[in-house]
Image 1 (cartoon, rainbow, N blue to C red):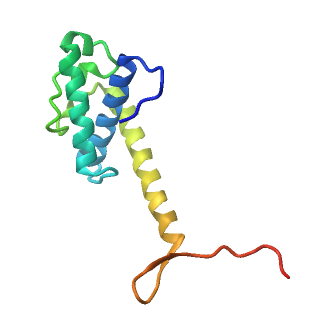
Image 2 (cartoon, rainbow, N blue to C red; image 1 turned 90 degrees about the horizontal axis):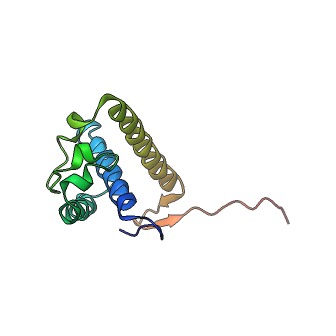
Image 3 (cartoon, rainbow, N blue to C red; image 1 turned 180 degrees about the vertical axis):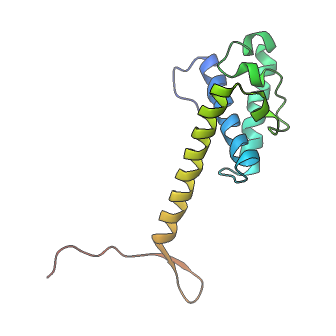
Amino acid sequence: MKFMPGMTEKEKVEALERIIIVHSIIYYELNSSVISDQKFDKLARLLAKKIQKHGEKRIRKTQYGYVLYDFDGTTGFDIMGRLNEKDKSYLTNLAEHVLLAAEEEVKYENRSKKINNDGKVTAKRKRSSSRV
């Protein structure tokens, strides 16, 4: 994962924490997915590696460290139960928006393509606004 230039290590961990929590909520609570299992696993391993590198005490000082201080990257099924009510509400709302945005993107992509009789996907042509 590429991080924005100038991000501190703490900001990188917090970004990964948010990503892991949001996608765990989408998967385990909303019964859907936005990213592949492979992508989630890659991000989970990266966060687990950072937690191991910096230690539990330091990770507990991040925004969601109280939830993920012992995260080993294998699963996110128990994350929702660890969140306090304020964070649970905020992150569930965020997860719902991420899921909605992903669904809208798929709808847009489907509208902008059509399937030919031979099964090939082609983009629809835009109508010209001027007449000759």
